[in-house]
Amino acid sequence: MERRYASHPNEVKQFDTERLRKEFHIPTLFTANKLELVLTHEDRMIIGGAHPVNEAVRLETDLKELGVSFFLERRELGIINIGGAGSVTVDGTVYELDNKECLFVGMGSKEVIFNSKDAAKPAKFYLNSAPAHKEFPTAKATLEDSESAELGSITNSNERRIYRFIHENGIQSSQLVMGLTILKPGNMWNTMPAHVHPRRMEAYVYFDLPEDAVVVHMMGEPTETRHIVMRNDEAVISPSWSVHSGVGTSNYAFIWSMAGDNKIYSDMDPVDMKELK
Ligand SMILES: O=C[C@H](O)[C@@H](O)CC(=O)C(=O)O
Ligand SMILES: [Zn+2]
Image (cartoon, rainbow, N blue to C red; front, side, top):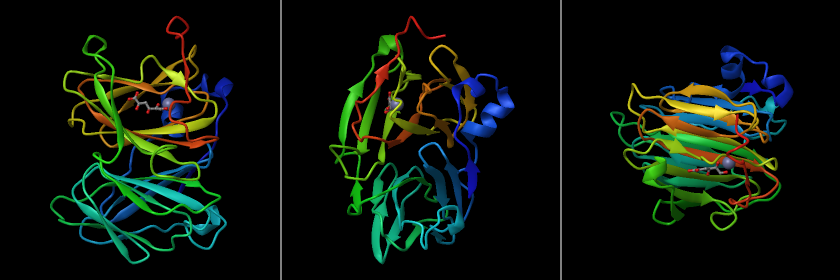
């Protein structure tokens, strides 16, 4: 598991492109038959991917990094499949997970195994794990079961549908909040007007992008924005003090996930558009 440290805005505004990417950009989530994990010290979120192709992949890591005897002893896990159909087996119970379906795995679960249904169309399980203090039941949600809403408008090039899976009024967790947003064709902007939420960090993974498309992701304090160029299936860490917004060269989808002091999805401090620099 790769370790990333937490950051201070006064330091980050000095970073060049290479350093910004080294600290915040996660280029590799899906490697055949492997588990990829990045532990950020921003709220101790783990961001990763399991990509079983012709072999099962297990949720395991160097436990010294977590100081426990099994991965989810003091943690919970959110999973969204962004590839072909697959399954997640939690302590012997099999949960089928199709594209854009979500599984929350509660604290205390001992064995988590990822499988694909068809090696020609392998699953891509995007993973977010946050520390937990209380056990909540493992639960699955589909796009249809989730709380969803239309956001944006065609005149702002940001018509999109948001699906909230794990949050205050959805699947219950200790602190993990997770869902996804799908932009309609011809719409390129997400999360503008931008916001911050000093009460929790956030991670985005951009997916369903054509191979030659990019998303120009914006981060930084509202008056010190920087950009990170993102390609398909790449993630980015947003510290609590940073905006997180982007514009693509085509439409796309993205998963957002947060960990911190509350699970209230709408707890955001909007940035005054006149202040953005
Ligand atoms: O704090 C919440 C997050 O930044 C995202 O949910 C924003 C988002 O999905 C969107 O604008 O489409
Ligand atoms: Zn946010």
